[in-house]
Length: 93
Image 1 (tube, helix red, strand yellow):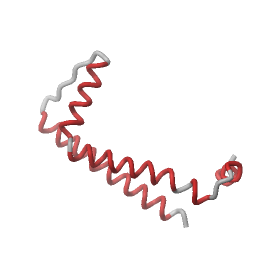
Image 2: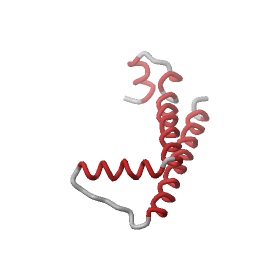
Image 3: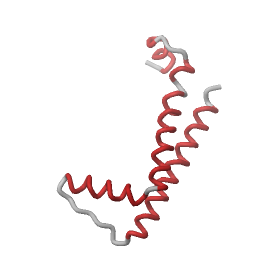
Image 4: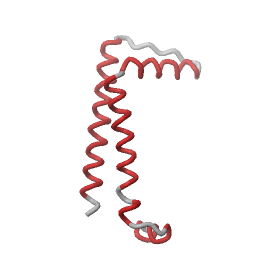
């Protein structure tokens, strides 16, 4: 079943399904990415608590490097999400 057949089966228009899902996921990704970028210390603590729950203990060797790398990951997530939104909007026409 191709995309056009799926849209017909679901009874939805192409504009209702195709660009909306990637855009919504991208908007959520932007929010998460900004949170990771601006609060890397909290993200690291959340990760440490998660690993403790599954019986692992992790500690970064250099907290300064870990914060820098976490901020880079947040920025990358925001950039990737913005590119996805642009791509989705350009391909809907």
